[in-house]
Image (cartoon, rainbow, N blue to C red; front, top):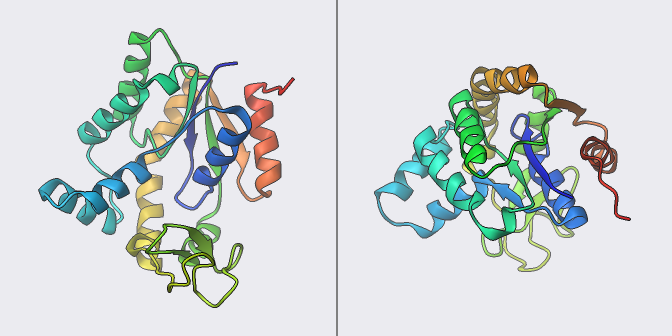
Length: 220
């Protein structure tokens, strides 16, 4: 089957986790703009990398024209012909309109925009507890997915670190930016009749079951 999906929700809603699980189940590629830009920050030593790093550490959004170009290039790759799961994009109505226009040129349209609803305090609790291994990139959560040894990576045995954009002040700012900038996108998809709401606090397995039901997935 084919499924072209957009995942919406605040930072910390679990969009990346759900997208990766769905990719394992369905084979539909998970495309995270956050991961793409973090890679740029790590690999690029030019002004572009520095600029994106500054924007992300302030908890602000990367400009539309830059994000659109990155997404367009990625969605043009062969593995996206029969579907994709967009995580972290679109975040503005302008991006949503760009995506619609691009898909039309490919004779495609979105299957659904799925909104994972999670309250601010839950988001803050989830993200401020998140840690990452600076060596291998493995992600942990001190509450829900702690390492075996106190703040040491299970694989590399190096001390885990907290990303700048996971500190409480930045998390709350990111949530505020999400409400201000992304609510119009939610309204946009709601008016198009393709918005589906899922409670993001009911546990991973239940959330995945809801999403599979929405897209009519069958493994038979």
